[in-house]
Amino acid sequence: MPAVALLVFREVLEAALIISIVGAATRGVPRRGRFIAGGVGLGVLGAMLVAAGAGLIAGFARGAGLNLFNAAVLLAAVGMIGWHVLWMSRHGRQMARDMKALGGAVQTGDSSLRVLLVLVALAVLREGSEVVLFLYGMGAGGIGTASLLAGTCLGVAGGAAMGWALYAGLLHIPMRAFFRITNALLMLLAAGLASTAAGLLLQSDLLPAWGTQLWNTSGWISNGSLPGKMLGVLVGYNASPSGIQIAFYLGTLLLLGVGARLLREPPRPAHAG
Amino acid sequence: MRIPVIVFLALSALASRPSVAGASEYSLVLKDHAYSPSELRIPADTKVRILITNRDATPEEFESTELNRESIVLPGQTVEVFVGPLKAGHYSFFGDFHQDTAQGRLIVE
Image 1 (tube, rainbow over the protein chains, first blue to last red):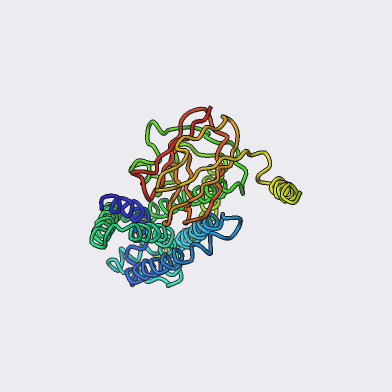
Image 2: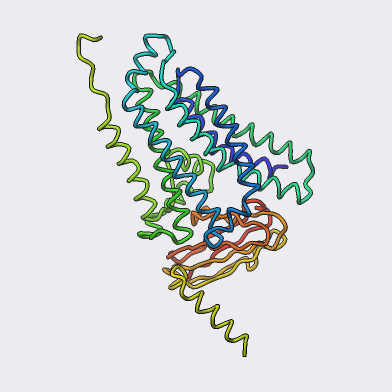
């Protein structure tokens, strides 16, 4: 049971951290709860489908199919975040103004919410499919339903609680800087996911390494520790990265940073206020 | 007479695969949720290809947080994971789904 709870906790935590940033980034947007819940639901469904079809997926690309699939999921998530970040750089100020003026209700198009729904679904799908495969194996190994269920509930509750704590913490950011900070968090998240995707492609020898073990901060925070894992999800922390991972990380930040600057909404004329 | 021909063909097919060229090959087998061998010696500063085969009836995930590697290995299947070039040292790996038994380390020298 503790082994089940621990693994489920770790996987749920990763998805929960991403969802909590999405939750904060959509603060004040009507019907966002329904979209986020929809994303989680679709993600769980997708996770079961992926786990059921894992044998099929694994058969592609000389057995590297699952690896490539995971990399594709991560890169799609990066694309979703990128879309939202660029959209926000256009509309973020208006949103913050609306929140002040209307006491929290922001009128905004559904298109960005749909993108975030897909992002949440991808995050849940990626971590969830691993959980499903694990639970299936545990069940087949004869651990017993009660133990399996208790461990799963405990793990989900623990991971969700951590996500909730991050969300509650983010809400304390002053409104003035709020969307600027959630946007920056989303950019770091995207950069980290891109770097992880590069690592997966490197693992299958589909990318050049551009140097391995460029530095090593394992003695400070190791990848396997809880802080290491959380920082890994949130800002792409990696104790011992390859050159290609750093290139993907910085490349994502650069693309989104430059894109956001180019798309930034023009300052309003003085008389319009 | 036949068998050497087949072996030769298989070897040449293997050798012609671009990713295999230049990376020597090592194998790990998962059985009863444990790695065998549990210690794998590989040369330093060299990229190697590790083949991980799961002989158990349930899925496993080969993982090494130190090496930034993770790969699901379904029952009866083999996955390949490239690692390195690595500095000399010890790097642990484990089976994420059975961490109490599936533990091993890479000895790079």
